[in-house]
View 1: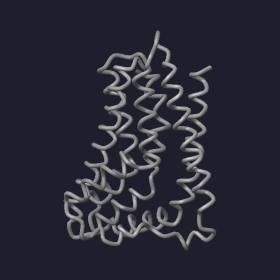
View 2: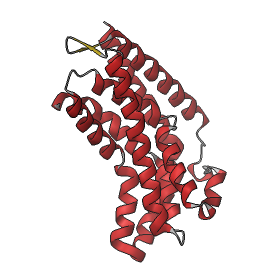
View 3: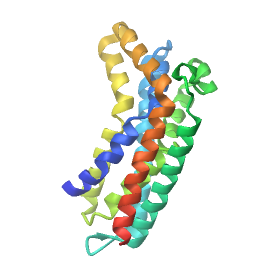
View 4: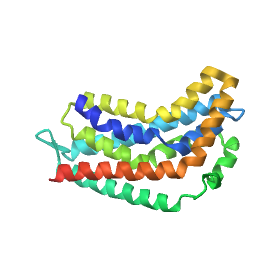
Length: 224
C-alpha cells in the first residue's frame, strides 16, 4: 500500500492547489449562509473526487489494471493520453495568461454565488472537483495508479481515501480557518482570495504543464 500512496501523493497535491475552488469556497463562507453552504461545498468536493476515483478502481478491477503486480499496457496508454492533454492545456493557459496579474478576471458566476441555493452549492463542489479540466484527469490517473498497484481492494480503498483527503486540503483549509476563527477569519481569507484570484491562470498553467509531463513520463515508463 505504501508504494501506491507514494504514486498518488503528487497527483493529490496537484488537485489540492486549485485556485478557483479555493476562491469559490471563500466567497461562499463570506455569505450569510456560509456556515451551512461552506460545509456543503466541501462535501460536494469530497464526494466528487471519491466517486470519480471509485469508478476508476472499478474499471481497473474489471479491466485487469495490473499483470503480475505491474501496470497493464492500457494504464500506461491512459496516463500518456492524460499527460499529453494536461501539457497542451498548460501551454494554452500560459499563452492566454494576462500580462498584468491585476487584469485577471474571475468567472461571472462567482458574482452570483451569494444567491446560490444549498443544492447548487453542493453541485458546484461536485463539478469543480470531478468535472474540472485539471482535477478530473489527475483523479482518473490516481485511480488508475491505485488499481494497477496489485494491492487488495481494502488497501485500494484506503489509498483512495488518503488521496481524496490530501487533494481536498486546499478547499478544507479555508473552511477550517472560518470555523475556528469566526469573524477574525475575514482578513486571512480575504488575502488568500486576492492572491488566488490574481495568480489563478499562471498557477493553473504551471500545474497543467508540470503534472502533464509527470503523467507522460509515467505512461512512457509503463509502456516501455
